[in-house]
Image (cartoon, rainbow, N blue to C red):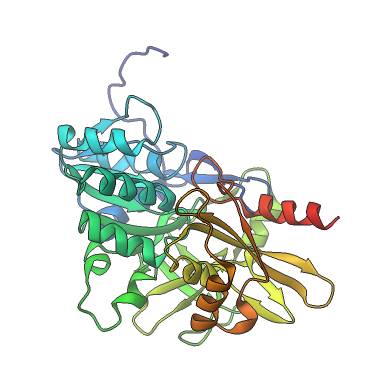
Length: 376
């Protein structure tokens, strides 16, 4: 560790000064260096207080996920309020360690990817814990499936807040509040729970077609956002910057739909969308259905090249119990019950694990590559 004398005062920075060169996780392509300014971080921090959670001096932030991304970004609001900062002894995410540490620290907030939430809930159930000591778990970084978050609230109570953001607009596009996640009385609570919430305070949010025209309520298009948290651009990559920042709007590459109350439901990354016979199929919709089967623990749906239809749907499935793969006929029946016939998988691959990057995101490019190699 490098020793240094303390600064007499915070280093002065203008809002436009670059403060963080943040590299995207690269699940759909080569990582790019996002130029995050001091003003971006300030806006993100104030949005946290307004839209996610309050922070008090007696609170603690637990860094149990990579600090280079979401977990590290949440240091700012806790520094500002003089809260405590804790790194688990393992230096990594360990559900058992977190459940043992949280009651000792008390009033703990933490960031977790949805896969981490799933592991934490499973461990809490196994040891009879309800998450004592955990105040707020902010989850982001990938799809949180409806079945998983319902299970999480049933086991651990109203401790969860969902955030949707990107490196290009860090943790600051939408938020789904603790109250919305825990509510079971609203007539559309399931639809709300399946969403990523509403626009945070410092941004404007739209869903548009390829020409940038607003989509009607409930219709799917690309999510665009503008406001103080949006990046300055990509480091040494003017072409990628021009492709992503258009007329002040950040084109996220994510597909979604807005309801009449402003709740945003993510469909998928545009690059993950499957086009079969000219019809668009969003993998997340298929994944949500397959996860209803009790023997499906994790699933990832991707497209495989097809000579007639262009692409066909393939599901990679991790069983709840090793060696306990569900019957494919049952999975087909489940799909036919909930989604259109053309969207159901044409093949199932039962695997022990799904490939993930350091931030817990499934790397679907690797799954597509596996299928391509098998075909050749």
